[in-house]
Length: 471
Image (cartoon, rainbow, N blue to C red; front, top):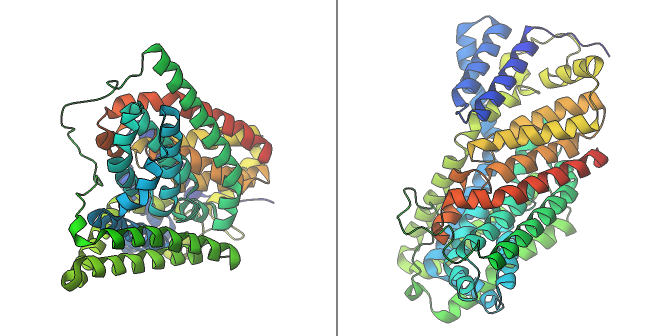
């Protein structure tokens, strides 16, 4: 198949390379993405007002595509707020605390509980949910605070967030950029998430036990008595047991997990995926938040429920504010370009990214190994901004391009780029993304990042090798 590349293709490719370069230098890419959209508009329409309007319309397009993801995360955070405020979170976790008897048990139990809670509540609220209750228990049995922070990071911000099987915010972004269904990305990510999670956590545990025996890792390692300049945004609010009786708290502590387990059962029973699955979880979280708010605050329940929602939306848009301009640019690589600027691409074009992929296939010998290594590197680079989410649209777009050149493996490449981006930037390696867990555990975020570095690199190398055989 012959593909005609015009100036629009080359400008789009140049913008991608510049975005990667900016991310490597840890510079913000928002303005660059906006300029890229504007320049593409000028080239395609030769109209100043159409190009300016195109920038705004591309944002609207991106927000429409991301709105479900923003809403679900906002609602989950709102529910976590009311759980913290009423003390239900402590009742939910207290039975687990009784199982922690040794440092090894503390590491694995805290990690696994963090992973499970993060699937349903997202990692940032889960850190607050766990920190106040399980940290003192772990310290009492001899697990250093730095190791507690490692467990929460690797299992929550690593395993749970990189797969994001329940809320499906991450796979939604990458799937849209790659032009494939969300279910395809989730299915392809399962073996990669398992390999990455197992290799990284086992490596981290082995290194932790080695350093504890040698005395390099102690209760004082990484601890800081100074007040951190930036406290965790979702540090646990003081519980107010008087809002609910102990019996009611215990009933609700059982009811909330049961509701979400029922959601998971419904997803399998009715084959709910993507937006349908997200809507089910979001509706359940919203109704649970309203019920608990009304029970806890009684006459002020309506007003308090609105306050929790506002807190959730503030968090959601704060997280996704930097994502919208970047996603707006990368959506132009597919059908969004025609929707915003009209039918200006050459006859027979399948979109900017597809065209570049076909051209690449005809000129450069791209194979599975080169594709997998490139997606891991690109994903890791996009994670350097510390959010983990802002650049995964780029990973999906490049996966689309490389899969077109290879002829297969688009879902695996997309999932690999997503996993690399979130493990690096979602809260395991970049120090400024580690602040929530570091602040709650009272450790230095830079020391925590250093401790996570070797296990995460080992995991990425092994996962990339596995992906090569799956493409």
